[in-house]
Length: 551
Image 1 (cartoon, rainbow, N blue to C red):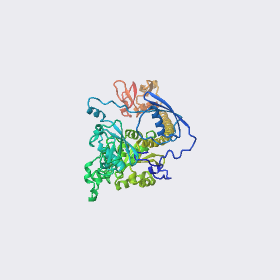
Image 2 (image 1 turned 90 degrees about the vertical axis):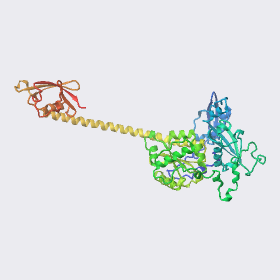
Image 3 (image 1 turned 180 degrees about the horizontal axis):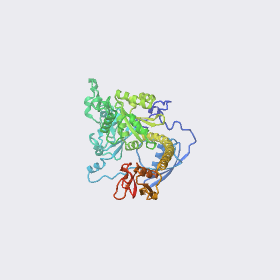
């Protein structure tokens, strides 16, 4: 049961297509019937723990009811109808029940107590009598009673001035005060709303809502017959469509998608506060690249939020679901969130063009089939090797718990695919590393062979070493290598410096990599003219030189 009443799977998504580009997740549809097995749960709550055994065929709601009843924990929320079997739980499970620690209010004054709650959230469980539905809604303490009633007007189609309430304390007689100052119970408060049988209904005339009667905007009764004069009462009382009373979420025909998203984010924050998903600023193509085409470990799912101000669900979906701390945190950690406003036809047409280009015509056609009152939509898209796949389309008539479960279901599918991609990527990188190492070894081998050939060629081209008793002027050179070894050789005094350079190069120290220096005074011989003789270079009759690598 969602916050807008019971709905079936057929109302939550259009008929599935055979195309691989659109595969909505329906976890329980294809589960093979089998004999129900028993699941063991160890449940811990503060300093207490119990053990519960449940059938796999029972639902999550039944499981929570059993746990909390055993622990004597009082609660107020809607139980999920998801069957335990569809969660694929192991036989033994450990669960932890968490409840907020409610700090006692300061007794010094009422104002200090209200100040302590000003930063808290209230859970209002509101029963709509005619529809026999309950709505569990979270509101910041700074929200006014009037703002709560406007939200309920969107949900129940009961204008604020026709709402009649049970459960508000006597101190909440002024709709302009905040929830923190209203005197309602924290953290959870129960209320009942119904439609007044007539605009002039009084306390004595009503037999449906008997405890507390709060008629909002009573001054509006003066406009009861406004439609007869051509005036829409919804405009008078601010209950018209969102697009009539708010600036547009996105400008029409914006040239740059990034600028459009900046405007969307600013307007979303203005309406619903700063606690919301981080919307990607850029084109849909750039968002897809960010989500799908990085390293396998860094990839994420793409969440496409489609807003429509003409839908009565948009305001509650944004304030209750998209701004819930758990949803914001989960989307931030696991998704790239991109948004678009389809209120204007031109913007909707532009979106359909983008979706056709990136996801195929089936996805665009699917979006086109949704009616205005089914928006907002949240499309969950996963990148695959050959094409992008839409895993799920979540409509606006959902709850925080159901939204979280569907996001987690999509993450399970994505995580399985991601692990395969990581494995394939690691294996591919390992193969590429081996190939690079082999290529580098081959290159080094070729380089060594080339240098060896050069050294051999230089060595063969050197003139023979002269003998000291030959009678010609002889120069005896001693050369220290970078490793500390010494090269010694006799040269004719008339020998050119180039012969000396070739000799050093034949030993593995080419002049383009090493410089030949005298010891004192320090002089770089390799910078001299190679046509000079050893005598001209003053390397006669003997000299000690050393080799140094060039920088």
